[in-house]
Image (tube, rainbow, N blue to C red):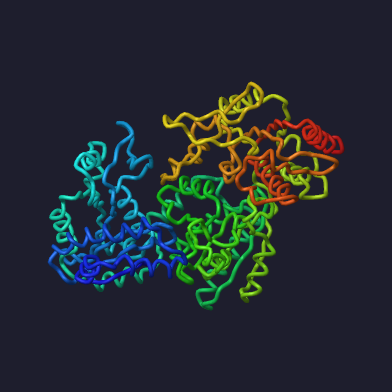
Length: 618
């Protein structure tokens, strides 16, 4: 999907003649159902004109050009791509454009670029990452049939800023993905002439536009290698039954050319993600077009970091809002409880809102859409994923739906009884559980220092351990020097929340959520619900705040005690329900044991009594 394509002479004429940005803005609005920002329109006007001025020097008419090419299953767009050949080899040059006039570097260690106070990836790195994305998942590039070269073009940079972007730390990068400045017009033209000046570009650009989502063998091998060496990803019992049904359904729909859907329900630790990722690996191995999608940033980032070179087949529900109809053979919607009413965001015009339901977008994107759902894990009022939604939507559209329930527990030391206690004590089931002693360890404390000892003792024994808490304290951004504020305060005891993500791009393995969960830094920080969801550890200390309390024989959500921005639009019983969901997640992150510090006395007494009564009856 792109905003414009054509020949090099046409591109030069349109971009140099004025009004090209209007054409692009109109196409953008038709495709994305919202207006382009002023900054984007300004960039199209000035940056594309600068690019056209240098591209005009190539001297070959049969060069194809793509403008604003939307990466498959992504929200990212490539500014411009040129297509042609060299020595009979089809080739493309990818260009990242920047209007920046001045940049700075924070210090001698930083590889991010500062434009004013905002951090950005180096333009050549951004272009190289986009090229890597295409090489991983686009059929023409993943097959190796079309060679790909990336570069950055900063046509407004002053001399000092350009020098900074050519600093020695970027030398390895610039060798593979060059950077061009305002005075490098001849150099860009030379690169284009060398790479794509042999003609054949118009047929190639049409071929690439029609190309399909097809991950490379390297992506498939990466997935398979991780799954093979990590026993936690192996299928057992009812997981295999659901897996087999979905494999058969994908093959079936290739012949019938119709849509179908599968709903797989299961609580925390029942292996929904194991089934999803195993399906992803197997379907890609069999040359089907498959992708994994979620509505949770932390969860998707964790999977992208886990599977490294295969990260581009893990995406977000929002990224599928403009996916071509039936682009995929199989879409695996994990954490389907986080499906939203629509994919509208803050940039969507009011007149364009609520035009299309997100669940319909997910069904439209694939021949077979699988929803992995836990009815009690949605965290925000705008998260509406539940069985009723899936059943009603598929029924309305005449899409066959198969349903499966995963009821075997593989988390919390396989203790179904402990998981049942969590659901029972929070009011999600009415039948008391049986004794879980000997299989799982649950303890209570009245001191936060006990949680410190709990985490330290676990990690010193070679286990993974973290502390998590209800969202009852503000979550501050890091100071300029990177220092974290100790927002979580209990009497004299203080700790910072896990590092808050900044408004910038992160590599999955460098994202603050991933680093909190996988590095020793996380042992000194407290995780909130949004960073903890999707992760699991050997042992977890839970701080139960005053946002959810036990009063008069029932759970009561106290909205004023919560700092969660997700609760702003919730009221009454909805607040209580969302908070019960949140603590259900926090209480089920520990594989071997959980220790709970409850700050409200009545609530603590209720939890302890509920635990004691179950164990005494057993």
